[in-house]
Image (tube, rainbow, N blue to C red):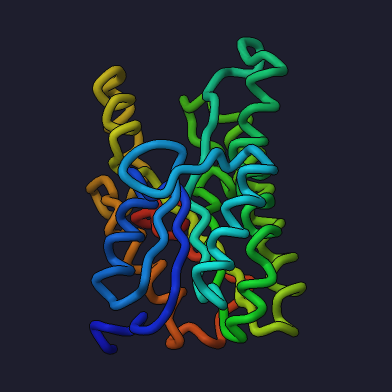
Length: 238
């Protein structure tokens, strides 16, 4: 496998200022891609991905700069974690917007550019929580949101196939990011709970996810669409 397997490809990565999105953007650049990093803040191209007008304007700017888009990574997401009795309807709605709408709006806006590629790859993020509940985790809205992304991506794979667009999901387990490190610091017992479920007894790193995303973005995965790949230390395998 070439170390420059994404040479000549143009990739847009949302949520690129930190966490999994940042890890994917960095590895894509290492693999030779021209990367357009997008987030709502940080040293990247800034856009509120839940503002339809802002997303439309972003897509217009990118269309002026590039004639096609080969890779779209939808890593940006936002969720409230509350038990059902404590969750407000506003928090429920914000989570579904922050996990489903945030994928829909940018994907719809960039669909013509993905079609122009003729061999584009969309990489969305489901979650271990799209497949099972994690005991002790108040993730009701998050489970619903990521389950929605999983189903939506299968539909995108079908709609995109005639245009050479592949769509797949990665389902990460517990990955260490700035946000999850804060959670672990507040609840040290949660780390032991996560590791008890993992077959591989360590927590994940954004690069663990980025390796899979790089493969899915490459021509080596040209026969892969509608798939969901678990990168979760075996947590959902038993």
